[in-house]
Length: 254
Image (tube, rainbow, N blue to C red; front, side, top):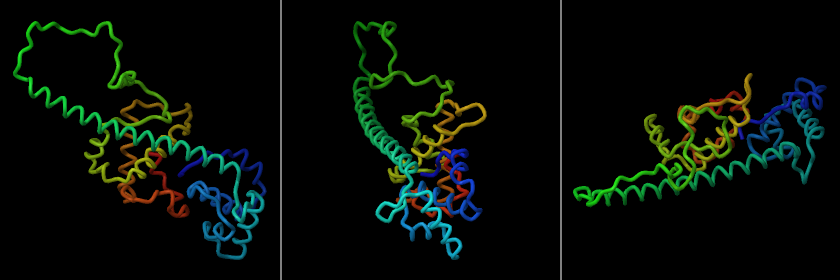
């Protein structure tokens, strides 16, 4: 998990009297808990924030005892725990959606191949007593009986079930990115982080609104950024990397 919402009022109400060193330790520990999606022991916390001097280790101990609860040797913060659980639930839902989308794409590909074969067999045959067909009295639906897609120029806020088009892999190929070679876990992580970020991001006018094509372009840019960092084809999730080395990394928010 690469981002979280920070309520400045709540933070400074609870931690406003910390020293500069203690503020740094507390901020790094919060970042690490979200990034690793787990909580540390005392020794792990010292290692996570790279504390080396006696003063730094003392600051780690102070922050853990003041703002975390020790459960069987592991220091847990209730708010972070609840938000991680909510995030993991959304991530699992996105993973299932991705699996279903790939299965439906494969099914549609098979049907198209069968239909192409049938059309090839009758292409030179004429149809006697041909009557024009009309669907004037039938509601418009897309494949599978689902509601028709949004108009191309309609702008909307990002939502949890948003998915790129089935031909999104073709856009990636034009940028020399092969979606089939990317581990499914990485695809789910990249797209899940992308959706979650834009669902919560606020600007001066509220939440961002874009057309479906514009959202896809932003997601494409995200993939390109991951490729430039050589993180795209890694099998392990990016969030397992060291948070201290990733503090300035915002490519996922492009």
